Length: 63
Image (cartoon, rainbow, N blue to C red):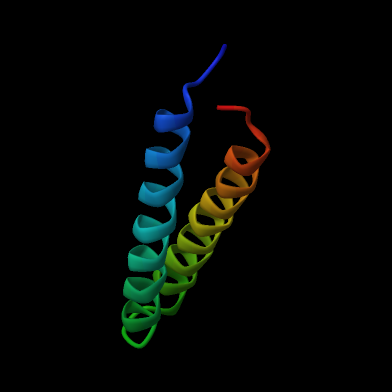
């Protein structure tokens, strides 16, 4: 499966910004319900890390 550079860029930024939003939401929810808050923090952190990996991958793509 071959992804275009434009698709990789869009997906990377959606993951980064969406992940940071979910991570921040998790920090606020954590005050009320600790397990749900930590779950959101982990999911948001993983999405952000995935976006950073895609930015790195895009830098290695030709085109």
